[in-house]
Length: 615
Image 1 (tube, helix red, strand yellow):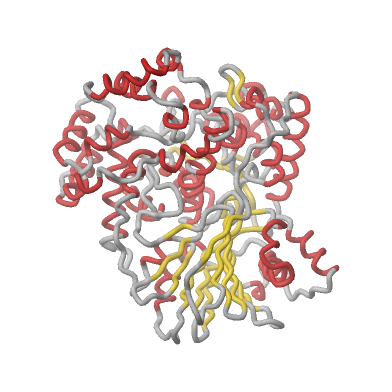
Image 2 (image 1 turned 60 degrees about the vertical axis):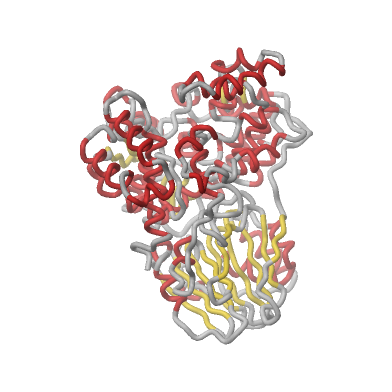
């Protein structure tokens, strides 16, 4: 895995901003730093060597015949097959790398090469004054772009690369704060920084002639769609899931460096580890007390059964305290999922013994793993009421103070498309308006992005599509990339594979959620290699005892310092926020998740908008 940056100018380019941009993301590729320059184009590349360790595979890579140049981050797992196909068509190669396969494939097939690639990728190709960029089907590898104050087109693997351009003046995207407070992340192509966009998963970008215009045009080559050709037979589903997952794991294991796995006590990482059987797996926890915040004991037990060595770490809360702001810095975007914390330490642990790890991300979204995919019994009684009565619940809820009853009544008044905004939802719109400064109260509600995914599909499929296009993109995969790359570790996700998706998209609803059992067909498929204790385990996520941390003096004081600042007043009702903090400290309410989202945003703002520590 690697990182790249670039600057494209219509005029002759003659400053050294590309070096500061690359330096900001050198953690993504410490093995080699390289640059390419011509009168209109400057590229920087940081390489983490995984496949083909030959220096000839360093980037930026130039095709000697055409002068085309590429920068590429990721892995193409079927590159050997594609290479043979290209050689059969007379194409000659200088290296054995997947980078050259993408470049030669583009020169041969144009943008249609994208449909042939199986893997995780973000790349940019420059040929005859034309720019072509693309991201992988599922959005595993990142790519940001925008314009600096000089009108130059700038891009990079992380947001901090663009911020590090000395001619870029970061400004807050006011519309994004509202949805961030709803979901713990910003969804869609816009970021929290005005004018900076993400290239979305399954999209490409083209600039047809950089001498005439730097304006980019984007196009979609892939999107998540459920199939009407449903698999309804359990035995058929088990066979196809096993075949697809086995094939994907075999491809993802390929590397010229040490490969390990992340392992919790859950089914997803356990299934991947059982199929991979690596030399070593890695697991972390916070406390062994009743196993509440530590599943690494289960990981140890499974490794003993599989004959795999486990490297296990119990995270000290003082380490969390000392590294919290560094975690926010490396996340790159304001992202308030607490599981980023253990993932940061897990990645650090793994990098001491491996360069590549396989993990279980994507299984919940593909196979129906989240508890919210089941009917919510707490609001079921409201959903059974006639529509007219349900609409009245909204009016009644408005006069109630913030509480669990208020939130359930608000939800009971809504249709599924208005009710469900994703697995990461932590605040209702009314709670957000109560806390936000007037300037931001009318920001973009997440439902403006998510409601479209319920069109022409059943409710469960609609919920999955919301999470595939939002939670997985801007939470799960974002933190997976940033926390692993913070420690120069390549994270691979075998469930996020085209063959696996071709099966998952066909599963009938009762093969995904059956009664109270989530990921039903996947659990049945995993029986082949996992003991019953593992394939039947309910989902726990990545438990973090932050509720308890925030009641301790050092964490409380750290949060108080930020939440009582003048900066907090710019965005939030400071008195309400501090009341929430006191309520939490005194044990009156559990406000830790919302308080954490405020803290993350304010620290991020100071780092990325005020540029403290960036430039």
